[in-house]
Image (cartoon, rainbow, N blue to C red; front, side, top):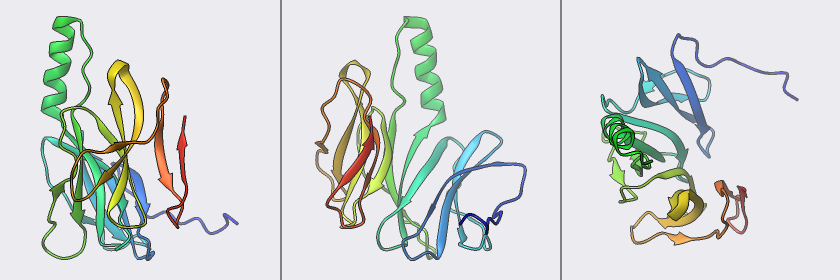
Amino acid sequence: DGGNIQRLTNNQWYDAEATVSPDGKWIVFGRQIDGNADLWRMKADGTDQTQLTFTSDWQEGEAYFMPDSETVIFRAWKESEKERLAELDKKNGTRSQTPMNIYSMKIIGPDRDVQPRTFTSDTNWAPFPAPDGRHFLVVRIIEGGNWELFLADMAGGDPVRLTYNPGWDGMGAFSPDGKKMVFTR
């Protein structure tokens, strides 16, 4: 009923993009400190806040749990590469995509086992896992600046395009049984 709101973080930093594990035990979120974004985890009650990534150039965020409640998929890009492309765009009068890819990572145990899951130099954004634990939705910008949804496989291979619309398609999510998908158009 909305009557039991509890603040879980209380600091001077930017905390955002929080997701709860399927088993309800963990929350993963992005925290930006001095312009650098990293991923953090905490227990569902806000305790045991633990930094998961420690990168000075990479900007990690938007993590979503896989069905095992121990693995997340997330998007990340290099700030230095984004700045380099912005300078080239300014010089050449062009507009480049932010090279952004999707990665997976364990949030439990000492080995994070960070693995790339997309392998392109364009924008791969807004990952959302399928209930089968193998597939995930990803938004990609294709020709003409068109944003479309693709279905990718954790095992690799070319993602399969799911939407065909000259406008913006994104922010996809699966129903818990995996039989339906919703997205924003």
